[in-house]
Image 1 (cartoon, one colour):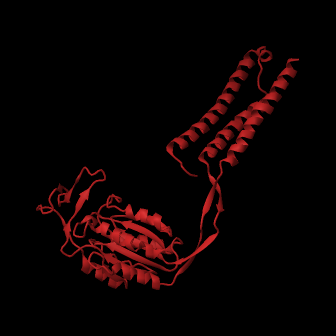
Image 2 (tube, helix red, strand yellow):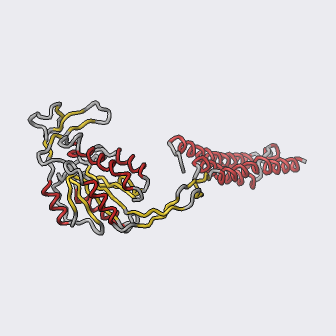
Image 3 (tube, rainbow, N blue to C red):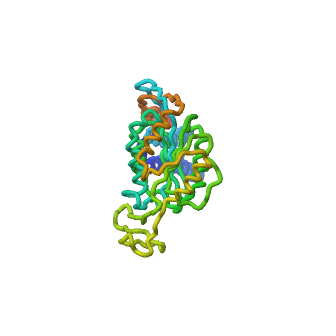
Length: 347
């Protein structure tokens, strides 16, 4: 179903409610009339009541009509048509596990750590054609931000949308991020040959014991040992400043209480050693992106069949057509039979 919005769903619910309410009122009115004719039998010959079978027909048919019209409005896609055949992509799955905690806004790397990572990946993105890419973001809580895709344009949109405001649970929990990555690796959403790129400044106190299983791992540190202040600005640009220990924002980076965030390089090197991974600092090592591309090109490739172009066929006609036929049957045939029977009884 496409282009679903609140108003469409609300209209469908109203249609279904009115259809059921109409049937309910029909039944209640019939009961009241029957009760009245039981008290005054002579009224029965003066009233033109619908036959019982016609009443039951209307009570059943109008809820069905309401449901059919509502599904038609939602326009479900029941069929897919391949317009361009199949295309076999050979590549590897690349999963970026990206730290989006507030410290990634540190300005020790221009313009900040997170932006530096985005610029690096965008610079090598054309060389990753044919591979599938995905993003897991984490701070206090991890989640799959960008599902695996071979569409580089879509991936770049996800990449540009990365921000430290996207996860409200502040802080850094690398242990949960590793568990989330292992969960993804064990699922069928990632193919056999894959590489994980962990991107963080290492400011984490959880010291994860679990390891990233069944994949190649590269760790990208971003930042400097000297560190820098953390600049924060809300989406509207109304509130901005350098983050302090008491959670205030100061206009000057050299204010006494401003937090200085440092790259925990020794911690990241130790983490790389435990996971048999390679470590690079992308803030100061210009060759780090090229080494990743070389590593990917040397990996055994997956063969992944994808459809070049898929056209999703609208399915509203499968519901609106029978709805109109039932409505026509009710208005024409049923009403005609009822009137004919009433005339016969009158004679």
